[in-house]
Length: 440
Image (cartoon, rainbow, N blue to C red; front, side, top):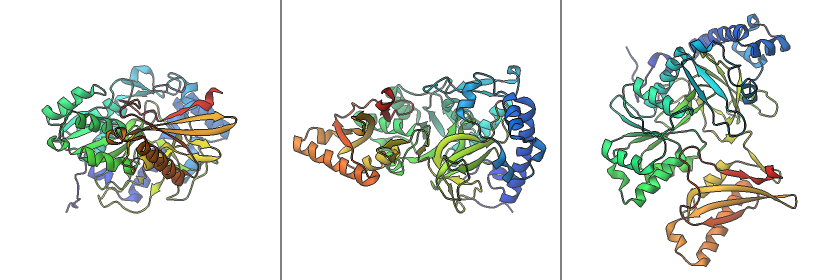
């Protein structure tokens, strides 16, 4: 007799598989993968030969710890096609990162990879509340960015109606929300707050919309920001995780329990390491996420260092899925700010700001170096009510924000309150940090 689950599940067999069966599957796929890349990718053959590793030596899942890491630098060094495991004749799709810190990282998909991507995105969309009866307003960007097409294919696979509106053009987004009856929206969390702000400015009652779920990713966000989104839109805000180097969105996704993101480890084998030493950390301990793509054909990756900081959550999820759960991304090991010897993540600042009613959740962190001393300025918008208030009210708010941030991170900061809607809005990933120290 089939087991009952509290929420719909797209792929019952794979998403609720018992752990021992999944480990057997993972080991089989890992062995196949190691042989595959050794035979087809010169980069990996050279790496394995340098460390004296032969594919036949992989006997257990624990042997993965002896395999070399792969980094974004490796992908850039082999730009554009050097990491591909198949000829271009077998590649049906090419995506690339934005390349803001150097050459873009290029990824290629075989048709089998596209099918896998659609499958894990269908799992993600359904776990986040989408059904075949849903109308999905897909406000992720289409093009070289993987977000738009990833969400599109997954929603279509499960039978939902997809509106491929892409990012930007907020006035049209609102019109479509009103007229088309979208009940699911996909975009970045920062853009969803901007959308909420514009809906309010237009005098529209958010409760008059049919929106019920939002599937938000592409940037770290906090639990407090989730509460803000859910209050202002109001919807259930679901966290999705992915990165183009692995497959795009759909590597992991929250279910409606909102108690961590299920990582689809039948396709993406996760490890959590100490970013300094490369050694595994204890279960439940914060560290850097490393992923091995167990089933990719176009550009398979061994132990890819994501630089994203998270942890594996202990225990079972009430939804019935047996995939391990990742905590929300706390920040990035390479984006972490070190201010006067203290590690600071933008998410910590955000956690403070969304709890202070005098300011809006739109901010930037500006780091300067003044006479060899690091200075962190937090530029944050005030709300409309405070902006029209007396100077002493603004001064009090500045002190309140500065004190709260000091309590959170343990160092003093400069708080600069600015007018409503003056911090640059992003229709993609929000640019939170401007580090001027790099210019010195």
